[in-house]
Amino acid sequence: MAETTGEDAKTLHRLLQITKINETKYINEETNIEPIDADIIIVDETSMIDLALMRYLLMGVYEGTKLVLVRRCRPASISWTTEVY
Image 1: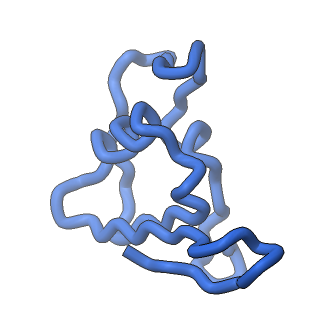
Image 2: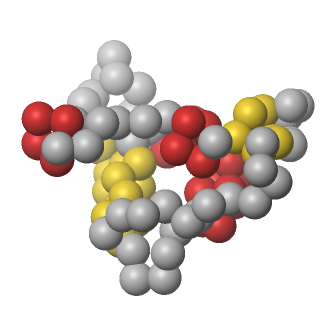
């Protein structure tokens, strides 16, 4: 990622500065999600994101920021096809 964009890739937890405390709840050290300073955010493996984490991600997206969500259509052992939303 860094070679192409000049930015390091991050996990959503690291990007949002949150920690999972149980199956449906996350904690942010500062209790507020800071807006993500980016023109475009590309999220891969979105099939692995639960609703609580997606909520935090959307809370951090500035109005006007492009959000690209990518997921596998089938397990990797069957096909490498991906979908972009």
